Length: 72
Image 1 (cartoon, rainbow, N blue to C red):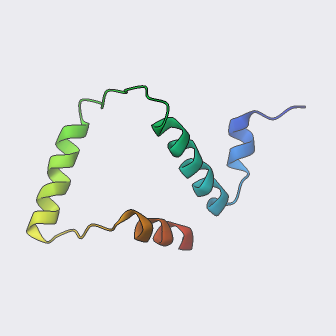
Image 2: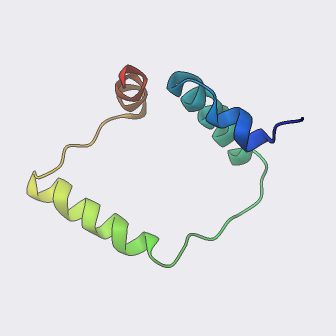
């Protein structure tokens, strides 16, 4: 019985899933195809910006975020 890609991915350890996500994102971001953001995205970005401005949330740079996620 052949497993689907989704079933194979679900069996991966977390760190491998994160590496796969990063590789997929890198590939998709270089295709040159524009994807419209969903309608709710602007509201979520504004809420996040307000939390950062108020000091309620501190942003991480991408390298620090990846290190944090890989420790989980």
